[in-house]
Image (cartoon, rainbow, N blue to C red; front, side):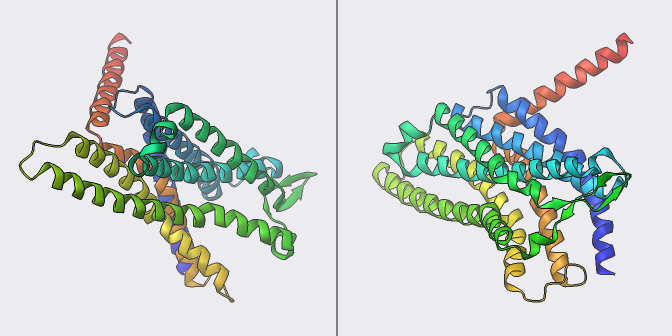
Length: 320
């Protein structure tokens, strides 16, 4: 009974997530790429990279895997080599999305806590290099996933479907790879984001206390404190969303590694795992909402884009 309820929820949830997540991330990429949101080039490059990675997560994971599983019983996507390659791209997109969040968190940590390193590290050039390295390493780490799966069945000489091979559950090499992959996504990033945010909070509180003491309560408004506050709000909103939405997934994985009688169908852990996956994929759609809440210039740019789009549509309709 519990499993059927989960399936019914997923059949509704994932199409809605795809319908919202794809255009939301696409709009975010367009607006941020215009560089009119009052953000530095360094921050803008990270945010565009994160939005692009989230867009790929929605496409490869939500659309090509989750929706395909529920609504497409036969498709070219189900041919085993295509299915395996899609899984590689799915894992790579998730890996890149997660580690770009870590990279952005580290960049803001350096900008706020490391004055000497800030001028050299927090630049547009460094951000471009970091994005390139994360994308390449994320793709390379995901290549072995292609060899995890084998065909579910063979029809007329054509392999269909992809399921984990028996050796994946028995081979020490595959067990080591699976543990290594899980540590990279999401356990280590989860801990790094928490640690960097804790260090950043401690530094911000200490710095603000010193500056207020030096300037006095009646001094004019401190523009540096205001700029730091906006940067910290954006940082904590993005990384906080990541921690909250990935938390269930981390707990689910740790339970799987510790539990001795984990039942994928009937055990309540199946509900926790499915919920964690849904929340994790929701994280690929939340950053645009974060920008809307925390960045007034982003809201203005969104209004301009929507106004321009509707104007063009109205003109096109009238012309026809």
